[in-house]
Amino acid sequence: MRLSGVRKQFGSVIAVDGIDLTVQQGEVVAFLGPNGAGKTSTIDMVLGLSRPTAGSVEVLGLEPRAAIARGLISAVMQTGGLLKDLSVRETVAYTASLFPGAAPVEEVLERAGISAIADRKVGKCSGGEQQRLRFAMALLPDPALLLLDEPTTGMDVEGRRSFWSAIRQDAERGRTVLFATHYLEEADQYADRIVLVSHGRVVADGSGSEIKALSSGRTVRATVGDATAVADDLRRMAGVDGVEVRGDAVIAHAKDSDAVARHLLTSTDARDLEITAKGIEEAFLSLTGDAAPAREEARA
Ligand SMILES: Nc1ncnc2c1ncn2[C@@H]1O[C@H](COP(=O)(O)OP(=O)(O)OP(=O)(O)O)[C@@H](O)[C@H]1O
Image (tube, rainbow, N blue to C red; front, side, top):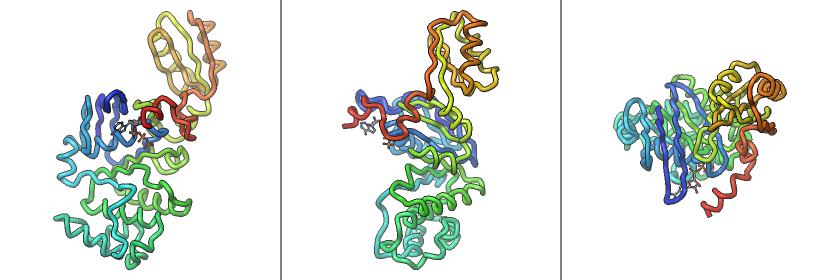
């Protein structure tokens, strides 16, 4: 899957502000970000439900709609689509009857970890079981890419755990999974890679431990004469997790902010140096719920 320069604008609201992202086949990627970060808007574009204002989305070299038509993309939706009076197995069998070439019903029940509850009425299933049922339905076309938008909202701990263990086991056979979540813990536990989004942009991209390190470190910002050259130097320093250049400022995220500051002040022409805790700005603060006020107003 590849997103190149993807933007999505709704009137004056920029929901997605230039996302570039390549996901390799077989990766399990968490899209982590606060409310309004642009996760759903991005997933909707990958699902072909909306079109980017600019940029392009490709899945295995195809446009989303073409990829969907070939059964290459499936989604686990959060709500809707289930009939209470059918059993779990009947629900999957009925959906399978709509797809030519659907995977065998018993096989997807097994993969979704719901064989044991196949005869249970959907109305009697817990939220977690219903999500695993939606997962089973999403597996029918044997998609290359599975998308999940906050699939565990409202589930208890045990429901989450069994849901994710079914997803992980299935992914081990090579399926690509992209899921949106608010929870760092969930992203860290179940994804190989975390893409942190804030205000419609990717602000960090790495393994769970890399992302956690970013949130625990500090940010050092300084104005320098040649920001690009200084940034290159900083990237080579131990303990530096990320370096950005913004105009004539260089911004480094580091566990050892003192070492970065010392380097900047002694070996470069840095001035206006600032050190702030919890570097990736609002990213993690906002993960706890207080997303940027401007966005919330826009939403209201
Ligand atoms: N159809 C729409 N019309 C207008 N604005 C929209 C629309 N869809 C999304 N937005 C705005 O775009 C921004 C990004 O929203 P999006 O739903 O993609 O974020 P999100 O990261 O999925 O958030 P959440 O975690 O709350 O689902 C928000 O400011 C939202 O209000």
